[in-house]
Length: 214
Picture 1 (cartoon, rainbow, N blue to C red):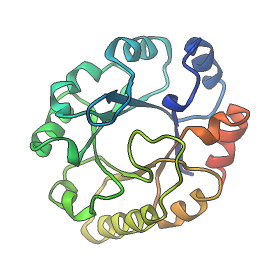
Picture 2 (cartoon, rainbow, N blue to C red):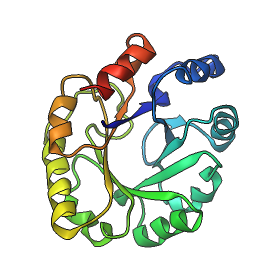
Picture 3 (cartoon, one colour):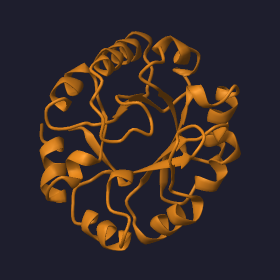
C-alpha cells in the first residue's frame, strides 16, 4: 500500500486547527508542507512560525517541500521534532550535495526534487545518497493545474534505476494526483502520493482511503 501525504497548501487556512484535528481521524501518513518564498515560486506560504505550530499541535509526520531559492539557508529552521523528510529542488541551488548533507546532519531524511522540465539525469550524482526522490507532476506553485503525463515515465525510470543499482530511495510524486492518474503511477513505482485538491474535494477520510486502497 502506498503512503499518502496531504498537501495543506490546497486546504483551508482559516481555523487550520480544526483541519488538523480532522486529519487525525484519517489514515493519512504525512502532512505535506509547501514552503514558498515568493522567489522560486510566485506565492508565499508556510513560514517557520506556522509550521512550528503545526508540528507542536499534530503528531502526524511532516513532509517539508522547500520551494525556495538557496534552501540551505532555511533548512535548519524546519527541522522540527515531527519533521520526517525535507525535500529540496535540484534547480534551487548550486550546492545540492552540501544542502542534502545538511538535512541528514539534522537527523532528517533528505529528498531531491525535479521539476517537470528537468531531466532525471541531473540528479543521478546524488541518487545513491538521498532517501527520497520527488517527481513534480505539475509546475511548482501552480496548484490545481493539469497532471503532466510524462511524470509517469520519470517514475518508471527511477524505479528501474533503483532496482538495477540497488538504491534505497522512495519515490514521491506531487501535483494534481487523483484516483485516476494514481492507477498509472503505482505500477510505475510510486511509493508516496502527495494530494491536495482531490482530498479536499470531498470527505477527507474517504478521499484518503480511496487513494490508499487503489
